[in-house]
Structures are given as C-alpha cells and as structure tokens.
Image (cartoon, rainbow, N blue to C red; front, side, top):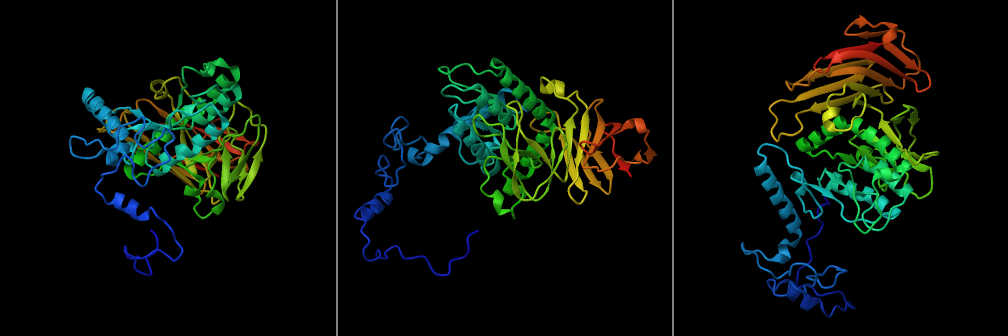
Length: 438
C-alpha cells in the first residue's frame, strides 16, 4: 500500500500554477462530467491504431438492455462471452470441467476460462515477448491457463525459431502450435530439428505434469501463481526484478530459454542458492550472478531444479495423459544448502468439478532422511513410488534403510559424476514410508 498522505489533496477549484496553459482543460473536465454525452469522442481517448475509438468495433454510445452503456462495458465483452460459453458447456456436461480458451479477457476471467496471448508473429521479438505476457497473466492477473501461439501465428517461422519455441512452449501452461492460413506449415514434424526439440521438451513436460497439476490445485486454493518471475522466490535480490526471460514453472523448476537468433548459448541468472540441472543433476552454486551456458543445442532448453524441493515425477513420458496416469512415480530430492527439502503431490480424477475423493502426499527431507506421508481415498490403482533419487551427495552412502530395514546394495546406485544416489524403493503410492541413509 502507498504511504498515507501528509497533507490533504488539493481542492478541485485550485488554480493552475502560474505559467501553465491548458486551454482545453476546462472543456475536457466538462466532457468528463457531462453524463456520457460525448462517449464517441471522450477526453481520455486511447491511441487506437484503427482510428477513432469506435472504429471497427461496437459504438461506445450503445445502450445495453440492462441500461449499461457500451463505453463502460466494452472491455468486459470478451470475458462475458467466454463465461457464457463456459456456462453452456457446463450445462451440456453437468459436473465436469470445461475447457475454454479466449483471447479477450478482463479481471476475474481466469476463474472460469484460459487464455492465449493473441495473434503474434513468427519473430524472435514476439518469442521473447511471449514470456513476459505469459508471466503477467499467470502471475499477476490470475489466469493460470495461458500460453502463446508457439512458433508464431503471422508471417513465416524458421526452423531454428520453431525449435526454440517448441521447447519454450512446453513450459507454457497452455501449449499449442498454431499459425495462420497464409503462413507456411509449421507442424513440429516438418523439420527434424524441431521434431526432436519438441520430443525432448514434451518428455519433460509430461513427466512434470503431476507436479504442475499440484501447482494448479494450489492456485485454486489460495492463488499461488503457477508461473513465477524470479523475484517471487527471491524478493530481496534486486537483480531479479528486471528479469523477464527466465521464470519458474511452478515454484521449483527454473526455465532459462535461449532467446537470441543463431546462437547456442544463454546467460542464465542464478540467485544466491543451489540449483540442479534437470537432466544431468549437475550442481550449480548460484552466487547472484549471470552464468554463460554454452553449447545449448537447438533441441534443448536449460532447466534447473531449485534447491530445497522434492519433485514427484513420472518415471517416463507418454503419448496421452490417460497413458501417463498408468506410469509409476519417482521422487527427486534436491536439498538446499542446509540439506533440507520438501514437496507435495495432489491427484484427483482430472475431470470432475467437485471431487468426491482425492490423494495427497507430503515429502520432507532433513538429516539424510526422507519422510513420505500420504492420505486420501482416491483410487490410484497399482501405482508405485519406484525410485528415490537424492541429489548433491558427495560420497556413496554406506547404508540405506527403508522403514528401518537395511536395503541390499543392489537396490542402491551411486553416480560419482552427478553426485546423486538412486534407491529402488518400490512402495505403493498409498503407503507412507521413511528412507534413511548414512
């Protein structure tokens, strides 16, 4: 909130400072106070590229059936239309969730519909701008299901631009390759590089889908943004305030796309914290500075796990979410500098508005011990926690126990290159258990 005034506001009849000349001020104020008699040409007009305020759209002096004037309701039209569409779909399939994507939105739209960012162009500038647009809607405007037209809508994309956008788009909540009918075809399979880039990114997206679904559920409960600028996690680090080309997918997965044409490197800002490469598990000790990541192939995108979290991942990807639900889980423990981590998992039927049964799990890691606590009656079938991976382990553990029982050495694999240990636990998803190592 702004600070309290130290003096009363100036009176409306106060004279302008000496030397000020605003000949139209009085007439404009009269227009403003004239009960909407000049809404076709109001004193505070926008810089409308199409011409006058009402050009190519509804006239602002139209009176609606409820007595409201179009001048006051124009920006509500898109949200009203999409909300009505949502209501119609809900009546067609009572009790089931709808999926409506709109371009025109107003405050509150995210409670009912999703959004795409509009007809962009196949340019690197619009590729970069899509990140800020996505963050604005997901983080500030509470529209969590948002994304851009991947590879661009207007004009013609290029192989390298589409490859980079395919990887970035996988970390948009709403992920769609879409273009105009006057542009060249840009399906991912059109270029081998783009196809491989999409495969790599979609593999990560699908393995992370339950983690992100948990973030969406949290947003439903308390509004926690599903995408976050770096300053959301590091509000005391002033260096993060202006960063609009990196973001957190959920609150724990740092995404740092290459954003320049014809380059295979990117400067990634790492706050003063520990991070782990999503694929290799290599450790980066951030120092509040940018690090030059080189040799970033066109089929790859830099993704890191923030220290202090436990990520629930599917052990492998799938072609559909229905197939994905049959895949077991693995837990990736990424300790912070104090050796602690935590996380959660939420599962429901994925289609009902009101859930009769749900599943939740809480993960806490401290002192080389992981505790998994589960609750809920949702039927997860025969799903299991197949593996637990602990990152940042400098030496191979001498002993690992599960619920107090020492595991055989064959169930433990230490990687001296990535400094990680993988433990085969094969526990039912419904079970609570404790894993400890020394």
